[in-house]
Length: 246
Ligand SMILES: Nc1ncnc2c1ncn2[C@@H]1O[C@H](COP(=O)(O)OP(=O)(O)OC[C@H]2O[C@@H]([n+]3cccc(C(=O)O)c3)[C@H](O)[C@@H]2O)[C@@H](O)[C@H]1O
Ligand SMILES: Nc1ncnc2c1ncn2[C@@H]1O[C@H](COP(=O)(O)OP(=O)(O)OP(=O)(O)O)[C@@H](O)[C@H]1O
Ligand SMILES: [Mg+2]
Image (cartoon, rainbow, N blue to C red):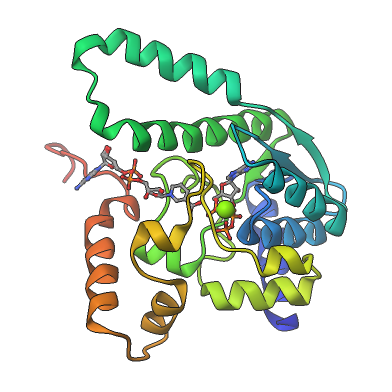
């Protein structure tokens, strides 16, 4: 893990230099992936890294955990509460849609708007400091497309996208992420009580095993392959209709 950490930190420094940027920014949720990224960017840029907490009807325990992460790595931080912004924006959209608003998609629309408001917040602050936005997708999330397109999936750099959830956990232990966060159940926190594994219908252990070429149950394999297929559009640039300069 020492080698992995050092390689990622070196890569982060190179990317910032190549982009002629000043530093790096990440959203800190109180979960494992952002804890690891916060530690890495703080080590890469001790004085030019920033962690942003963006509560949005969040479980208070998660925001306490986010503060633990900030204390454990010592990253400079700020908080932007998005609760009211989200409420206002989503309500206005629903008002404008009126009778044409389809309630069956309500929870997912509400959830993805949260992720995209967080993304907009990070990019606004990033522009202010000339920082690059660092994503927190791990290999399991990336392969299954378990992220909001242009929400938490939108970033300038993805330093842990090649690491399985298991490897992210190991790296977290090496970096000194607090134990309670290392052991925590992964959650997108997009609605009360959400856990990744319940929503996906498979487990990170199964996805990690699949990605590392180990045998998993047919049921898990089916779920993982289906998620991967349906989310191809999230891992590629938008299809472009071209009739000039083909
Ligand atoms: N074939 C296609 N070609 C091009 N675009 C296509 C498309 N199919 C859908 N789309 C577009 O993609 C949209 C659907 O994608 P998207 O908006 O991402 O929405 P969707 O994949 O439905 O939902 C996001 C999923 O990621 C999970 N998530 C989100 C955020 C964080 C985390 C976490 O782990 O922390 C997890 C969330 O719980 C949910 O299960 C459609 O509305 C449409 O605009
Ligand atoms: N309340 C929040 N404040 C700041 N950033 C957030 C918040 N919620 C989500 N994010 C951002 O969205 C990313 C995606 O969430 P995700 O749940 O996949 O990662 P995580 O919470 O860091 O780890 P885990 O998957 O183990 O819960 C987070 O890593 C973080 O960068
Ligand atoms: Mg989380």
